[in-house]
Image 1 (tube, rainbow, N blue to C red):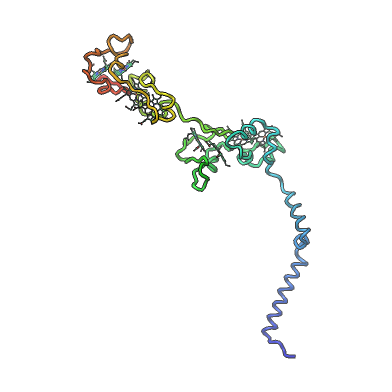
Image 2: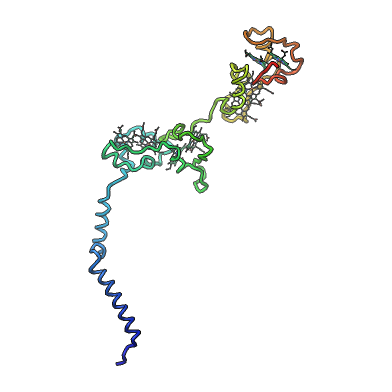
Length: 243
Ligand code: HEC
Ligand code: HEC
Ligand code: HEC
Ligand code: HEC
Ligand code: HEC
Ligand code: HEC
Ligand code: HEC
Ligand code: HEC
């Protein structure tokens, strides 16, 4: 019989060595739970069951809390689970001394609501830098029923400069509505419906004419004062000055 070449013998020895190492590990070192598939599945289940439970699940909170689950279910956040915001709460149910965290800080809500072009169209998104900065979100939005508050309805909210000016003028006591009739529609859609503006000299004369019955109001002769010009061609009505 022809003798095998030495190089091949050496290769076979190496292969036999590797094979015996693999077999040793397989049958002598590895525990049975890793080599026997049935046993493997069973021990994985046992191992997972031994881990402490962290999340209590969405159904259990309402056993003790009535208001929040009812409010949540009826509002925009109905698809959110309590523990999405309050964190794992099983420890709380085991012992009330442990309080789940409540995310009151401003940086929490933008996790879902910060503008991100990959979010579906129509999903309510804001730019946290520009959207009412510095205040916590829950100052204006109820986390369990986050209805967006109505847009501001006061004249000052949109006409801040005029309001600030009037506040330090002789007309500080006069409400905007003394001189402008503004409908609710103007507050909602400012450009669709505009408030009225005083139209003539007689309007200002109702307080400032000599025959007007106002007290402590400087009076002028409506016929001659300022000629035929409109009063606000010389006096800015939101900051009237006499000189
Ligand atoms: C077995 C009754 C029970 C269950 C179930 C329960 N809670 Fe509570 N929880 C309480 C009680 C009682 C308090 C009030 C403790 C206090 O005021 O000292 C409380 C308080 C809270 C608070 C307020 C903590 C604070 O700082 O004031 C939060 C938030 C809360 N629970 C969330 C949850 C969530 C989320 C679940 C469901 C995963 C849940 N709870 C399930 C009984 C329960
Ligand atoms: C979108 C996030 C969010 C979800 C979802 C949410 N919460 Fe809250 N929860 C908050 C925040 C924020 C506060 C703190 C409110 C505050 O301080 O005014 C809070 C406060 C609470 C409180 C304390 C109320 C108080 O007067 O101190 C309880 C109890 C509570 N949540 C229970 C629940 C339960 C039960 C659910 C599920 C049905 C739930 N929450 C779902 C964010 C959430
Ligand atoms: C886990 C994601 C998630 C978190 C965290 C979250 N929200 Fe929401 N929010 C939603 C979803 C989902 C809706 C409903 C969107 C819809 O109806 O299309 C929603 C709706 C809203 C709306 C209604 C906007 C509108 O007019 O449609 C407001 C306001 C809001 N959330 C504020 C908050 C505030 C404040 C917080 C923090 C306390 C918060 N959200 C935390 C997911 C989240
Ligand atoms: C000073 C009050 C105030 C604060 C603070 C505030 N919001 Fe708002 N938010 C409003 C008002 C008013 C609206 C409705 C008008 C508008 O869209 O600006 C609104 C609208 C929203 C909407 C609906 C936008 C849409 O396109 O439908 C979301 C979402 C929202 N806010 C989330 C937040 C989050 C998140 C925070 C904290 C980072 C926050 N808000 C802080 C007053 C506030
Ligand atoms: C939501 C924002 C908003 C509120 C609230 C608001 N306004 Fe305006 N208002 C505007 C805008 C924007 C214009 C400018 C419209 C234009 O130039 O097309 C305007 C225009 C006006 C004008 C000028 C009309 C014209 O013909 O030139 C007057 C006067 C006025 N507002 C008075 C008021 C008074 C008074 C109130 C309170 C009762 C008020 N506004 C509340 C946004 C608002
Ligand atoms: C004493 C009467 C008077 C009061 C009070 C008054 N206005 Fe006017 N307002 C006028 C007159 C008159 C004009 C027209 C000025 C013009 O055409 O040059 C005017 C014009 C305006 C305009 C048009 C833009 C401008 O600056 O000319 C706005 C907006 C306005 N007023 C808002 C307000 C608001 C908001 C308040 C309350 C903070 C207010 N006004 C209070 C008399 C008044
Ligand atoms: C509802 C009454 C009322 C109406 C209408 C009114 N004013 Fe006046 N006005 C006053 C009062 C009150 C004062 C004085 C306040 C004080 O004592 O400082 C005053 C002061 C003034 C002054 C004097 C400022 C100074 O330096 O002494 C001028 C100018 C003036 N108004 C112009 C106008 C013009 C222009 C209009 C029309 C657009 C107008 N007023 C409409 C009540 C009114
Ligand atoms: C051509 C510019 C001009 C017009 C138009 C004008 N005024 Fe004057 N007004 C002045 C000047 C200048 C003064 C200060 C000197 C003075 O008292 O005559 C003044 C002063 C006043 C004073 C203060 C009087 C006092 O005794 O302190 C009132 C009030 C006043 N004007 C109201 C009005 C009213 C109301 C109208 C419209 C009917 C009007 N003005 C139109 C220029 C004008």
